[in-house]
Image (tube, rainbow, N blue to C red; front, side):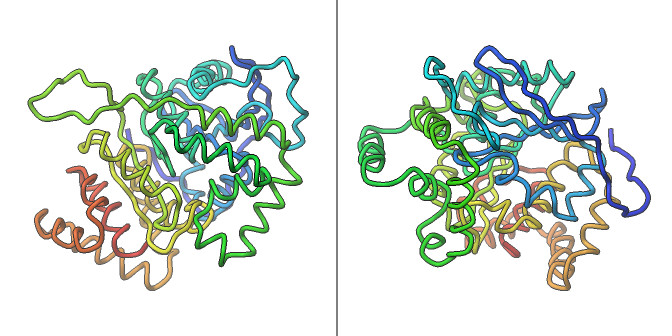
Length: 367
């Protein structure tokens, strides 16, 4: 079902509910924006280590282009135990949940708010948690947008390196190195200073450390790419997935690896050029454009909203959109040839649907 577009471009102000939701693995802080309806999913977000819903997603959801989405789809932000602003130090007797346990806490969140299904939007640790949730509860997940996902378990060498880092670096330094690439850390001083200040002054250091240790102790994501003519019962994501990573992100190799393990007919890799460790912060408009095409392909946004998106972009974006429409008439072989000149990994993940072709072309030309 395609939702009808609201008339007018006035600022939409949804009802916001903030609650601590009890789950089998501790209370999680949730912010529900909008009213859930039976005929549409909710966008469920989960943040990365050292962040909360504001520092991870505020740039994205406060962007004017996001209005087309939030008018139609409610948003539920989920924060891991002890990661919200002004959080008290967790009790010493509290065993911080594993990544698997955090994924199993999400059904309690859906039940609490009366949600039937979600489109997951996660970053780093949050992306891993949402992917695990989708694997175990495929009937609850319509789609996934996974930024900086790492499907692998921490190896022995990584474990040793992390221990050494804990001894020689402060927690903010360690988190910064997890979130941002070397180039950003060395050259984008304002951005790094902003996030270092947030981690130091807004987050509870003890709680962040526990969440980080839980993430570093994760198991490998149990997924396998289906092979034509092979085992049809391989464990993989059943829903459509959009993998996003900046080309200067420390997570590039991990995201490419994840893409290689997922069903190519349901997965698109969006590798953003000239973009750092947090694409939703660095280039929110481009992430929103890809997100809109992704959601539209699922039938939850009308083409009218996409037209207004294009009309609000600059002249470069308008000319690029026209190019995208022309490119859709070209052969798939020509697209593959052009794509390989940009990046082999992006083209490996393009599905046969026109929507994901548009996303992938957007990656090559504008990002």
